[in-house]
Structure formats: C-alpha cells, structure tokens
Length: 71
Image 1 (spheres, rainbow, N blue to C red):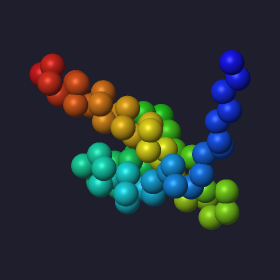
Image 2: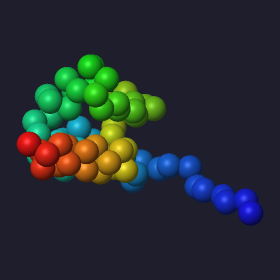
Image 3: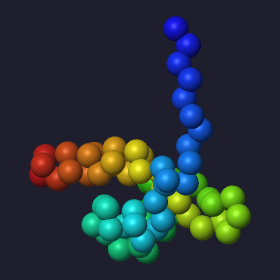
C-alpha cells in the first residue's frame, strides 16, 4: 500500500532559541553542536537562520536523558 506524506512545513521546525529551551541548553551550545556535527540544523530558505526539526530534537533529547541515566 502506498503511503503519502506531506512535505515538512516551517511548523515542524524550531528556531535556535526555541530548540535551546526545549533541550535546556544555551543557544550557543546548539550552534557549537551544529559546527561539530553533533546535532545538524537546516537553514531557512530565505534568511538562512538555523532551524531544528522538532522530531530530531526529541530523539536527541531521548538519547541525552538515556546517557544521563546510565551515569
């Protein structure tokens, strides 16, 4: 059976400020993680601001909390 999915919209993405709030880190930390490849951002097509997909952030947060529980 063929499943049709809609393309992502800007509602599926968070700004650096909102993503940092969700993860409980400073926005500069997100930018650093992006430069190091730890967490990849997407660029807004018009203004080139960093955007983070909510689904990716939730998975990343799950991994972070899992690592913290192991310690």
